Length: 215
Image 1 (tube, rainbow, N blue to C red):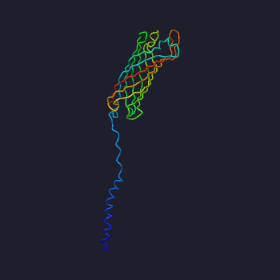
Image 2: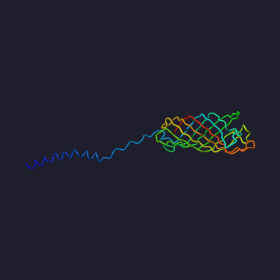
Image 3: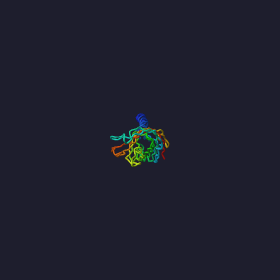
């Protein structure tokens, strides 16, 4: 009789332990890993190509006597821009930019400016389309002083650029970006008509759009 009672007392305890065992096992199991971010075509690409056009306003400036150099007028024109480079990481691209700006001075002379710059585009927020850009290199300008009888028609100068923009479809192989940028060219010192012209600088302000290709 005592054995029957003891067995009846043990059975509920065994049933309770059997129910608790799966719950304890689930509690000790490691939590499932968080899903990783999807890999986009832009993440898989290395080559970075940009080609487009801009509406540009240019103006020359200097320390003094700018009227003699003929650099004070605002000139409005269009320009073309192209970049070839590579993806550095998910937030940065780097390459070489070529920009060509044809313009006509107030006196009717053709002015041709070419920028060859090393540029970097940086997206401060991962997965966002906003970017900032900057670069430095060389600028070549032809006939910048042609209407005042400069001895040299083609000048070499330091070129700089900075700007910002937005890329549509930035995670795809083909995209479109809109941007605003300023290019600057430090032409240097000249003597025009016997008068020294110091610290001649040309500024180019542009807004434009371009196609973006990644491979």
